[in-house]
Image 1 (cartoon, rainbow, N blue to C red):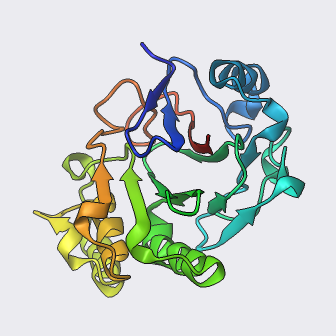
Image 2: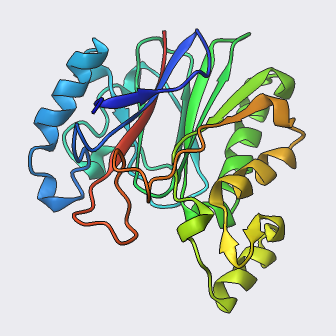
Length: 239
C-alpha cells in the first residue's frame, strides 16, 4: 500500500492525503505515540524540511489564515501549537499546509495565476457553519483574486452510503441550506461543500472530486465503525 495518495489538482502544487500505511499523524490521538517519527518520514518522502510544515489546531471552526514565513513549524511538536483555524492558504513555496481528518472532507484549492494554494478542513460541524464558502470568500476579499481562476479538489471522506441521519440531524442540515445533500435519508458531506462553493459563484468545472470513501477504503481511517481510529493528514504544497 502507498503511504500517500496524490491528486491531479495542478502542476503548480502537490496535493496529497496520507494513508493507514503511514499511520496516525495526529498528536491528539493515542497520546501521540510514534507521531513525530511518522511525520519525519513523511517529510523525507516529500523531500521537504519538517521545520517548514504548518499544521492546524483545528476545532471545526469557520476560520482561515494566511501562512507566511513566521508560521513555519507551527504544530510540528504538539497539536495545541498549530494555527488556531480550520483552513490555511499561502503564497510561500515548499510549505506543506496540513489538516487532520478521518471522515471529514479535505478541500484543496489553487489559483494558478497568482501562485496561491490552500486547504480546508470541513467536518460535519464545519460544513453546517459554511467553512468552505466563508474561507474562500475571505481569501477573495483579502487577496483580490478572481474567483474564476480557482481550482478545487475534494479529497476522501465518509460517503453517504454509511452516513445515515436521524430526523434531528436532517433538520439541522436543512436549516443550514443543504437539503439537496440529503439522499435517501443519508448525508453527502462532500456534496454539501460543493453546494456551499457554488453559492459563491464557483462553477462545477472548477471542482474535481476524488470519489474516495474513508469508510469502505482500508487505505483511510474512519471514525465510523473502524478501530483503532487514527488521523490522516491532507496537505498541499506550492512547488
